[in-house]
Image (cartoon, rainbow, N blue to C red; front, side, top):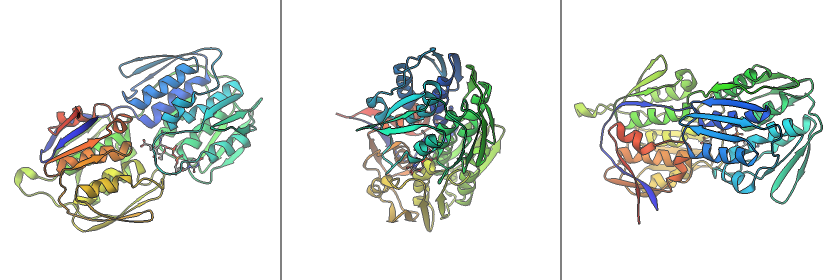
Length: 425
Ligand code: EPZ
């Protein structure tokens, strides 16, 4: 069994450089399916989810050459249209091949998605949107099939600003006949990044990043090159680590404008953050002077962008456990995303759950304990908790963290943390 071994009490300082956004890169490589030829995607993060997505693309006949942070994708004239169940179950994000494959091949079969266990994660909005564009959807035992001779543009109203549904429908619409409008579209920066890549392929997309996206169908697309937008969630995770255990940490290669709400909440907690061109400097509790700056209790509500990101929720729960006073964190995006709470309680956190609210009574001393990563962001949050816990924390099932963070232990160690990845027998 491998684990993160964290010994608390060390002060973080130095610079950490953030990689390309996992939640953009996964979709960009799927979008490459829309055009025969060679696309080159740069600033791709070196994470397990990308390796899983590369495996899906290879099964579809794409030659994927990954060299450092560059993915060279050679897309053949004929691509497969059925994603292997074992790969889709491993990676929910692979569902995002649905739109491009339907647009490219007129028929696609995907296994029912897997991925993080964040409660029920339907795909109804993806499928009903594709039906509005003219697809026929059929359901098998453990797969979904979509067919369409030709997709026809339509007005699509998303009942909820779903990121994945917006992306799938955007990619299905770029070669549909006529105009498609996606209303109540997701506004995450990764959507604008995808739209920028599609536009460079020859698509006609307007309004990406707002809640109304208009797409005028074109007959064909060409391959293109693209640089993945920086990962705002990885940046926020390191900013939270610095807020817990810094000294002074520079988080480099970020777009501060993509973290407005997260930075606003960190500042409300009492964290001092300077913003620069493409970087943040986070000043944590001044342990050096023996006079730790007190973190203040703050209420947080997760919402679709530009609201507070659910992907930073577990990390902020750790900060709230250290803040003086009681905070309430309300999780509106996923109904199963409080699994980290049980683990934080094992370390001494005082958190009460009431439906989708977590009431955190702060300034509790955390004690190192054997805990378990239950999903990607919960695992990262437990490592952060270990940074300020007394004694040693063992975070089992670290593979969850590897899905979205490259070299997490190495990067934290480079900042002065006592964190190692170990194989426990
Ligand atoms: C994306 O997931 C991200 N994953 C998630 O990041 C992120 O938390 C989420 O967006 C919200 O920002 C990737 O981009 C690979 P949604 P996605 O569609 O697309 C429900 C991480 O840690 N829903 O906006 O699945 C769904 O069940 C991951 O990096 C339906 O009910 O998010 C969920 O409760 C975790 N039916 C909510 O909407 C649908 O058809 C948000 O889902 C679609 C969604």
